[in-house]
Image (cartoon, rainbow, N blue to C red; front, side, top):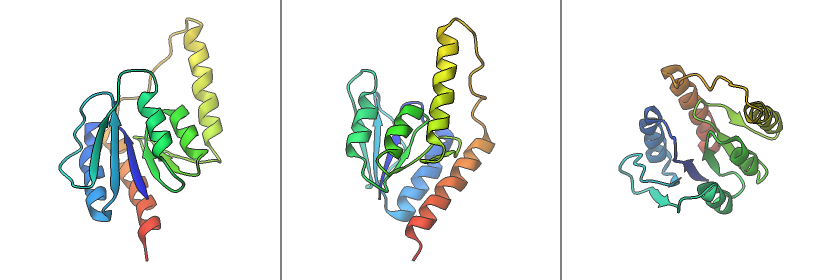
Length: 150
């Protein structure tokens, strides 16, 4: 299993959680972003800065991802592309995207975009909280435990 982090907009509260998991499971990890992101010191992490442009980091993540890899992203279209490759995707709040739910998440995202494009003002997501961080840690630990238990 390789581990990919969509680094742009990655919450600081999650960095120590992710670093601990990377070290515990010796995960080959790639952090993709448009600017320098630091998760922490680890020989297992490779930082890749992509050129500016829409979806450049997403495209590289999809290109490098294989079946059963894990991607952390809040980008639902990226999660859809990952799930279609039979890989796992979770968001910053611990939501696991899979083939049973990704199309619903994508439809809601697209509907909200249409509403915004029509001039309506919508509320954005709630501020990231410690509860979100806890939910993320629980989901990540569950995925990794299932993958690496002997």
